[in-house]
Image (cartoon, rainbow, N blue to C red; front, side):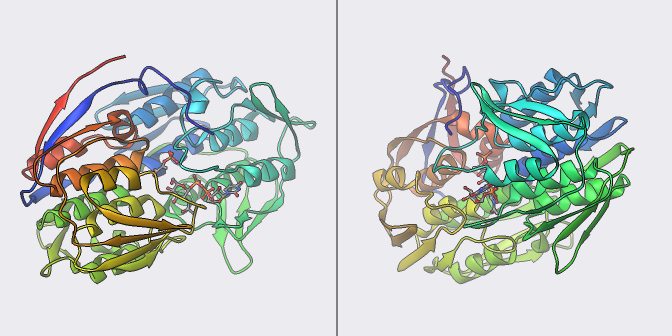
Length: 436
Ligand SMILES: CC(=O)N[C@H]1[C@@H](OP(=O)(O)OP(=O)(O)OC[C@H]2O[C@@H](n3ccc(=O)[nH]c3=O)[C@H](O)[C@@H]2O)O[C@H](CO)[C@@H](O)[C@@H]1O
Ligand SMILES: C=C(OP(=O)(O)O)C(=O)O
């Protein structure tokens, strides 16, 4: 389901990038977009205010704040903290337009359903690189006792007994455990009386951090061979919780610098925070990661980039959200790389743009073959989603000459300071504001 066109989406801001110079230096990693968005939904379950520290100030967290406010919650944003004060009586509606602008709509709806026994919500937004189903979310709502029906504006879920009940649900999909449906199920179960069980749960950091958030606040959460067990609580505490660093932004900066022949020192992050599948792919390309005595993690590039054979997969595999950037970096590797997509049937919205720079990429089913090293030349391109835009930026930074990239709305959805950070590393980037 495509994100609804908005003022933001029609923003014609573009950036000009003059590439071809090695980028190096030290920059911070922001709080994770995707973890923050799931924690926002979890915060709605609390009975007293929740303070999320380190949440990134990006379009998507702003939209989520507006969605929470529409339910009656008070949301204050300042000093890098997002304070959510859930209301006594929650309006059981996820805003029909705002809900179509973010991916976590069904997860937010689960929190509302858990609190009120009913919810109306639109189909989620987020990037539309392929169909992104929500049947497992709906199955969890049904298992929790809700009647779920399609209506004109999306979906209505309502529990006869006015409250959710403990339940069992399988959150597996043909592409592996669903991250979003696991969180949806957790939030429903956190407010149900009794013990719930989810089989084949996702263990992405978004899930484990939401589980830690709930467990810290009195909800019983336990993972074993059977699945994820959650026992609900009538009272959920509040208080502070720090949003973990953004592993996707960290990977993006590693790949951007390596594509230019440089290296980076990332603060607020450690080598262990990189999923093993990502570390393996970077090592195969000739990039190693080491924690630094002064804090943070440093990369080292060992000679020319080497080709990589890798496939995305569930945590701790290679994250799907890093595959477009990896493809962009590997256009500079000395040989043919293969990158398989396993979380989605396809995710190749970056390919056409990369070819415009001169990249040699073929797509067979869900596998990309990248032949390098290609000579990249400055190009004029337009990005259509959040990771495609960073892939195109990487190509522009590695290219000879000046490039123009449109579609900066997608960057602002998820990255608070990517362009200033690249400038700190030595990139020559000019932002040319546009407008609707
Ligand atoms: C496991 C995983 O890596 N999930 C990724 C997924 O999370 P997100 O939560 O958006 O998506 P899911 O993990 O739920 O979806 C994974 C796959 O399962 C399918 N599916 C999902 C739910 C459902 O009810 N039925 C169904 O068939 C989806 O279409 C997709 O092919 O996209 C995010 C944005 O790219 C990434 O940050 C996450 O890392
Ligand atoms: C696709 C992504 O985000 P969303 O699910 O919010 O569209 C992403 O974070 O790479």
